[in-house]
Length: 296
Length: 195
Image 1 (cartoon, chains in turn yellow, red):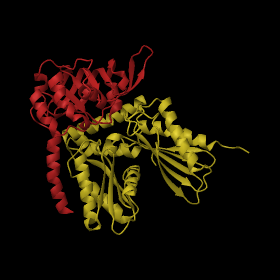
Image 2: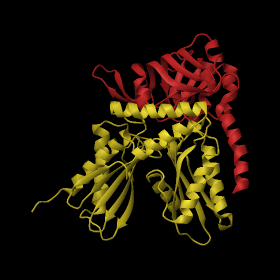
Image 3: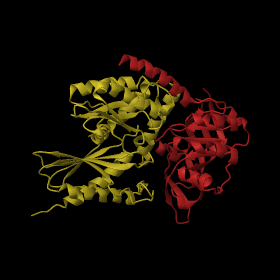
Image 4: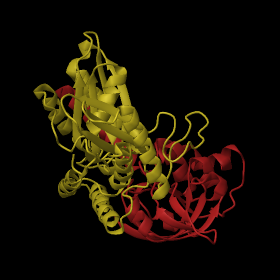
């Protein structure tokens, strides 16, 4: 009988994904940035977008990181119910892989204790990295997506507990005022992730899920997809522009994830993802075969 | 909107006064890397910076570097952080140390406009996240002080064709950030009316 060290396989995958995501951004993002450069009309905005495209080329040529902020490592895992490695071991493997990537590359280590501000180790620490879980019935595979999340954009996160009487209009107003208030700080144009419904904590969790989607994918619920389209248009009318210097392209996309909620609740959470919207995925089969996928 | 080349440190204040918000600038010479903890040490803990900051160009950065066997550092990936966190140091940097330019990403809030005008300083906007390109424009790390603050030390970089930068705030009271925010707030009223 051949036994596969699945925990080792997942650790290797995490180590590879973290570095790969930081260097080789997905094609849908490259296309969205090139498209933005094609339609931006402000002079500083054009300057920013052409510099971004040059930067991506340099990162490719020199195999360097796209951005110096190696972020906080966030993993989203889709685990099949028959996948033979328990999530507790998957989590341990993701932590070990993050540490290995940080030490071996080496990468800047950003993790600190939240009170003492002392560095806690190679991009890991208490409750770091962050792992999102989804469990899939009648499947024996595992998908791991690594989303290194930069702090400039993470600092531009906003939550409002709108009331039902505020309606969808209240959601739209809050998103618009948040993105205008953020200005150039989150490195626009990026992906505006929005979580609506659920509870306060779950709305923000959903907003983070939303920024990890491939650019321009639409929520399967037609009511939510319509809101995505509408907000995408409205946000690009604000004139904030690339790096907040003014222009036509303020956001590359607006993604929304939703959950049903209490009849008295109407939470809305905004999580911004910068233009360097890094992500990379590994599909791991039950027998330990890994298929890397930049576009998932 | 004009295009300029400026060599730092500057000795002639005209080099700063000729710049207007929105202009494009490419920088030559030497620039100094600085960050939150570096400035907290200077101003909140009262330690004199062991580098001459007269006429200097400061960059908001915490670089990824590799230490060489001879004790020096090679740049690996050098990018720029959000400036707004450090706005309160603007006035003393100009008044006490003669700093002439601060460069970062995301801009300074309006409270920086008056001291920059009074002291003849500018804020340069760099493209946040464009670190791969920025690293190629840094020829050498010539000096590192306060290594105990790694990576938030004082760094002296020799640069070539550093940019393109955009003048975000000029020394004449002009600020692209204020103009963009004012226009966006007006626009929001119109958008809200349509919702």
